[in-house]
Length: 308
Image (cartoon, rainbow, N blue to C red; front, side, top):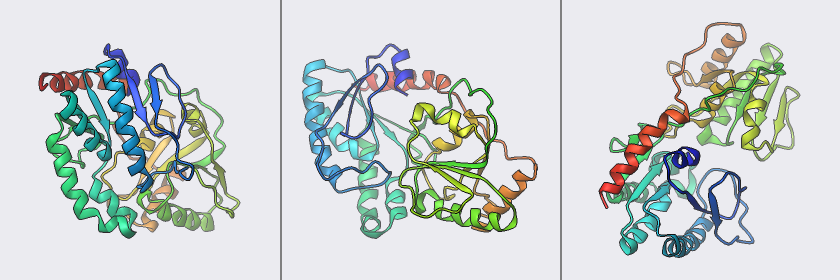
């Protein structure tokens, strides 16, 4: 997304949390680290409230120094920071959402589920105060312009298929991996399979048919995925998130499979995988390249700037 924005003639400065890697040509400024906070997996965390306060002041000083023309605010939690900055500096805000916040909190359960009603109110407010709202999925909000996650224009060179299946992404119930591992166990009882999992937090015990890779840099992900025949996206159908992994599978030149809409169960997923392994036709998925999103972003930015 940063590359596309730069191609439109904008200079991009990224302000973000302390964890992660810096690469690319955009300037990246980070908040100070918290000694106890090392979470890099998806999901909410109370420590982010402290980081958000730091992020506000980081943005405040960055704006005074560089006088940007636009704030591109990622995810719901950034909107209250962007709103305060907008009130102070009168800079238009593009709010960029990944999913519905209430639905996301409900999926994580526990105390986060109890906060869903408050999150619903906050989400409505955030969408209302933003100058323009974009989202990677139409399920997020009818008021959002969909800018679907894209795939690279070039797919990696074909490699030897070492694995039958691959899953790359977060681990947990909201991601559908509970069902995935149950489905894999069902398949393994019927026929031999080889599975590659690319995710953080390797379990202590793994069945022999699973190979687990914890650290694959994102820019090296496609060649790793290309080693498999089939890529699995087990995310529940009720999820409002877009699917970046599904697009990566397509870009890697492997066959993608999602939870069947007619039988969204563990058994249904297992049957779908077995059918693909047997060579039956796969479901067709439409995908766009990031480059094709350039004109959409150009229009969105122009609309936001006109609102200033």
